[in-house]
Image (cartoon, rainbow, N blue to C red; front, top):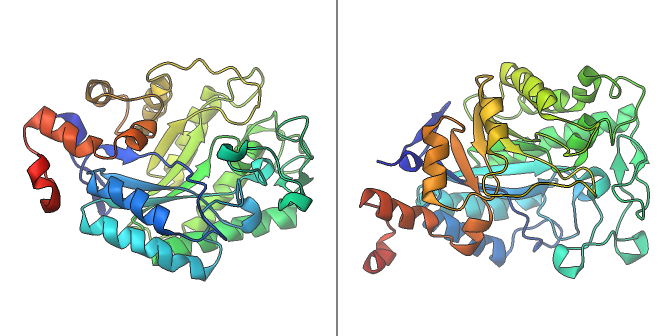
Length: 352
């Protein structure tokens, strides 16, 4: 059996293989609600054999959406649609996960298909918030600098969203602390210029994330896995870096986080990122040395790449993004090719 097809047990959950769907926004929701597109999109990846079906960044508050078209879980009426996805995915052997997020200063934008520009209030946008009144791009409207009462309210929003995620039937919860969204904005000294207990030192800049993790654990069942996605570096001098990420990962592991989803960038608009196949794998390798489980991401497209990463101990899982957009059946097809056997849906056996 190739390593990608080995199961992985985390707490009470066993993921049938080491392939995860990386959370990728679909920008297809209205009022944060699941619709037919989400049912088909996620259902197809479950049928295609992915081990961990991770839903896109799902907002903990309306103002936490990247765009007006993001999924949300800030209201109980958003639970039922998500439950349809988890129920179908479970029927096809997939473990389900949801990434919960707040976009901070990167909120209130149009969808990428429409150009992705920041939306004014007149255009249907809203006032963004951040640790400091520094816009993501100099041409954008500065965000509102959060006060401590508002920060505590956001922590409570993450907690309430975690509770709803459990009600919707998810097996795994991931806190989004990467890609320049709100939690990452607090981590990085380039976007966080605060002088209170949430800014300045490393210990202060990580405070919000640690508070969110501690609060979420009061509503997320202890027997279910908790993941955190981190950007390992800002790819910019003076920004958040790998050394700090490793240090934070050690702390999160002690706090009860089970896996670090290892990505990078997204916080600095003009950062130069050296893209190449597997360019982020070394982040996962370094973080894994702390003892926490890791997932590797970033231009990983072949079975050979995936097996090499796992065999060499550089990650415990591989999260695929673009490859699973191109080929939702990659997991079952790759299993058939590498192991000569594959558990296909009975409806598709003629194609085996």
